[in-house]
Amino acid sequence: MDGGLSTFTIMLIVFAVVFIKMAVRVVPQGQQHNVERFGKFTMTLKPGLNIIIPFVDAIGSRLDMREQVLDVPSQDVITKDNAMVRVDGVVFYQVLDASKAAYEVSNLKFAILNLVMTNLRTVMGSMDLDELLSKRDEINHKLLGVVDLATNPWGIKVTRIEIKDITPPRDLVDAMARQMKAEREKRAQILEAEGLKQAEILKADGEKQAQILSAEGRKEAAFRDAEARERSAEAEAKATKDVSEAISHGDVHALNYFIGLKYVEALKVIGNANNQKVLMLPLDATSVLGSVAGIAEIAKASFEKDEKNKKG
View 1 (cartoon, rainbow, N blue to C red):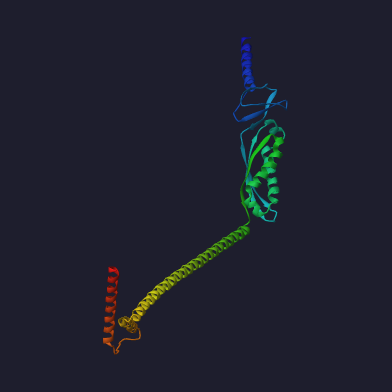
View 2 (cartoon, rainbow, N blue to C red; view 1 turned 180 degrees about the horizontal axis):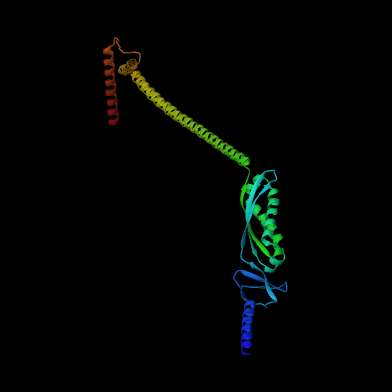
């Protein structure tokens, strides 16, 4: 009888241990577990220590509540202008409601992946190739809005959709490269032409300024030459007047001075002529000396007149 009691006690202890182990559930951080009672969903276990009813309750599914990443495989897409491109991307999503994610859709990741691929073809197929290559942010935004709205009943939140790569066919890549090269050459030619145009404008402006300054210089020189000639003429007129007055008063020496001055000036012009190397002329030295003497007499008379004026 004691042996039977001991066996029953051991079995009772084992049963208690198994019961407790089945009743106590520890949920790791970042996860949630769905509990089913006789196959029907009853509650969701949060991270930490939880108690369920053994043999009645069971863990139906374990879901990761952290943000997760799905790779979108490459697929061919026909654009609006009938260009074939190959596209791939990534999807970031997070489970917000563990029960909906487990019971509203079968195979959550597969459903998200197919939904993204379908909408990717729809969105990119409505755009031209140039738009496709230059408006990735717009494509990402459109895809995110459509996919997030469609997956909302599944208890998940699609946070980001990113297009990783858009690969056009090789012939299109070569055509685009040639087009880019032509555009660069065109811009270079335009810039070169603009540079030449600007250089010609600056050169013409410089020549214009130079001509203006040259004309200004010639004008100033002509004005100064005219002024010098005017002063020379005034001096000569005054000298002629003085000589005429002296002659009218009977001073013959003044006439000799005037003739001698003109005589010397004529000899100077003849001596400076380019076509004359040797000059041989019969010069009347006595007349020249007489003219010089006349100059002396005029100067003497002028000094005496000044003295009388001072004394008077």
